[in-house]
Image (cartoon, rainbow, N blue to C red; front, side):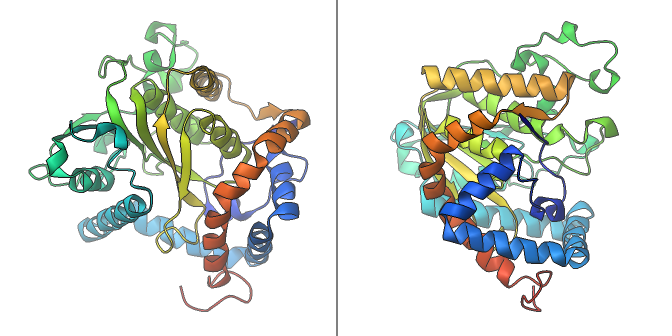
Length: 366
């Protein structure tokens, strides 16, 4: 048996390889042995790790610019997100799902602010097909969330300000069951905002843990796991059969991502998208799941898995214990599809890191 820690918070930590005995380590070995482009990425990551101080500083500077953005820089980041959304749609067609042609589209944007993807969803859905109805959830600015920058006149959105990870009723835990000895989660509140029914044609899950969020330090390590699974539960309970789900993820080869992709592969048509410039050096990419079938048995099994992971990360946080047999079985059954999905993502990052200033022997520019 081996343990899998939750996603690292810094890009430099993400570059560090897991121990070979961990689930992610087993996946990496499988990919290095079977995928030349991943082996190349593995080598360039190791070179970056040898130059760790420079890499740490590069990513630290990137984070500082994001965390301390003034009005102009926030507008710049908003434009970047719109560029990512437009290119994502150009490659995948995600923002005009086939299931909602000619009768309008209903969109739910989770962790929406500043609103780049909602803007693109509105502008890319052909007006001749009908109206665009967008609802959204976003972390309040007072709690460290981003301000909403989209033009509400051109792109009207009904926004609910809340921390999506705290909607206990949503995840199968009545709010009165929150333990008194868990003061970090006193803020957990019932859903009571969006009816749990298959309402939405397109659901966007673009959340990532914010360093600016005001939360107890004790939550930091497992907050990415809580946020990811909170979004997945909320989305799968509301997506229409045949709908599309778009989700921001990190590191295709990380065990928790492999497991997640394998689950989605059973009840949707999967694509992965990585922006060739904006996200090139980072591990970020988007899952695009089309023709989602939320009522099938595979989707119900996935929902149980996501709820269990949210509960564990919230109330009994500890490294996930995964058997070697489970990893081997997943790679045996899903490995070829994982390679097919991941190869273009790894190729983009490998090429970008080869030119990165923090990789030994790389280019001097940014």
